Amino acid sequence: MIELTKNFGNKKYETHMLNKILIALFLGSVTLFGQSHKDLIQGPFATPQDVTKTCLTCHESSAQQIIKTSHWTWMDEKYEDSRHNVKQFGKKNFINNFCLAVTSNYPRCTSCHVGYGWKDVTFDFTKEENVDCLVCHDQSGTYKKNPTGAGMPEKNVDLLISAQSVGKPTRKNCGMCHFDGGGGTGVKHGDMDDSLYDPKPETDIHMGKLGYHCTECHKTNEHKIMGASHGSMAANANHIYCTDCHKDAIHKNETLNKHIASIACETCHIPEFARVEPTKVWWDWSKAGEDRPESKDEFGRETYNKMKGEFKWAKSVIPTYKWYNGSALYYSAGDKIEPTKIVLLNTLNGDIKDPQAKISPFKVMRGSQIYDSQNNYLVVPKLFGEGGYWKNYDWNLASQLGMKELSLPYSGSYSFIETEMYWPINHMVAPKEKALKCNSCHSKEGRLNWKALGYSGDPMKVKGRKF
Picture 1 (cartoon, rainbow, N blue to C red):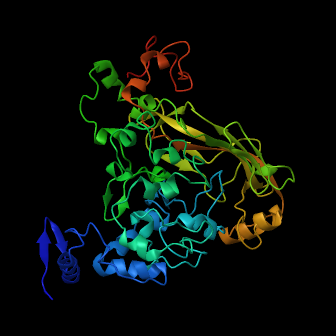
Picture 2: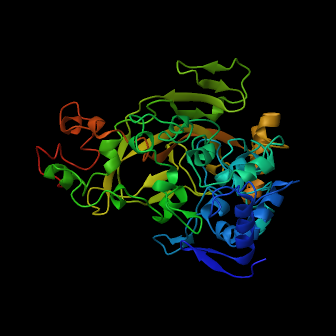
Picture 3: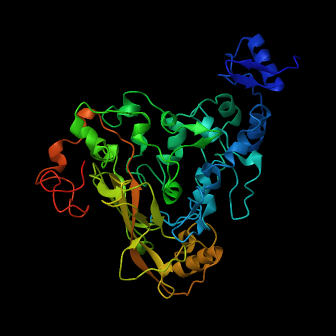
């Protein structure tokens, strides 16, 4: 065998990888630079971890890169709050008004983790073999995670076929988790659902007409994927902006170009979200456990489920518009609430006086969820697994078990309270012909509430912040 290191088109292949490629080239069954892995990967594989170990024989640093990312830790960048306290948020420690929280519900929630076996708090985040290479790189279309399997694949997945098919991530890979977050298509993200697997141009111009995959905008460096999740919003980090690509004088109309200082591009170019499939806008956990028939709405979406309560769905939704400077404040476990007020699970930072803020579009998710009526903070109940609400329909037991894992006391008294959460709208960019027109905002029927945004009236008619 050749014992050397060589560069091919700026790609550096270590000895063992070069040897494998040369063998495959000799057999005439693989393209240079490893575009096919059929003859590089032989199997068989008894476990998915065996696949990862094989991947790492060539891609030696990949697992170490992955375990430093938020896709692995489910925690985003550390930051200092206004009191100089160092904080860190992410999917791992958020409370939301969908399935409420990851804590104590790991095997169900972590079915979308880019790893294998995160069953409980003892999961070892340092084990490289538990990195799931296939969920992002399978191109066979046959790889699926077990919905309650703590990240493990379905038992009927042929690991060899999947491993031999690997390639660059596509919308299919990303969408498996991001289009179906919260338990189904369009549940969490009003601007991401199954219509984006193969969208029409009018659904999303970048994906539908130009054929973009997610990685065109969500650039990746050492497996860290750009894009601000809620943890990044808390830290005001990892943002992607339309102007990263669309630079300088974007519009021919100079008046429109002036708007960019105060108006997010998405505000005009995503006139509605959930244009093809409906999105969930209300989730009432207080109605769970009732023995009544399950029901559906005009969209064919579920409106009652004994395990989860009542839902409302909406389609072609006009966004809620708020000043937003890229950062937000988030409710933390144990934060006190006022029982007579709606609980804001996140609060967007920015106002008309903030030079960094722009009027931006959001989906507002509303719901009713459980809280400790003596301690006056939200409860994270155990929903899934032994002792969970979905087994016993006992809120007291579920609350006791869930709060124990959070190391917070549970008083034994509970009630339900209305909550709100803001979700950014960034996808489903419409063709420019469908963008908002001047009178969409600047008219009596305009969609913007100028006074709520801090203006004395329509700034086209009265003095206000310049566009």
